[in-house]
Image 1: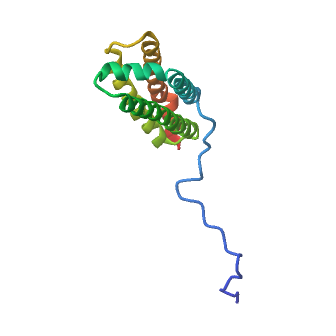
Image 2: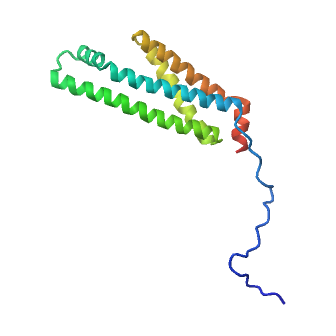
Length: 169
């Protein structure tokens, strides 16, 4: 007669699940990798925008003074600092968030793909609206590039190889 009590750490392994073992995932397809690369391009452009914002604070100040000519110097200085700070902090948060999402889509996280679609869709919407407003040449060019990158990311993540990659996970 065998002893029904097993010694600690000597447990039988669980039987394999009825639906089979884990599937082999494989590397991300080119469409997902290219979408991640385009996200990195967007991050680089955002960080370049930080440099431009920091080096053109006088133009921010001029734009604020033009928009509100009755603003006194202290208020104008504060508004300029706030505008520059918000711009820099939001660009850094953008870079971190998009960088994490790019990494997650390459790892096959479908929820990250959906979040990217939402963010890229909002970029398209607000980007197209901003292109209708008068702006400088640099802002216009950057806006067109950003809208184009967002559209390309959406298309790449919607292609069949991408969909199959995320479905397998």
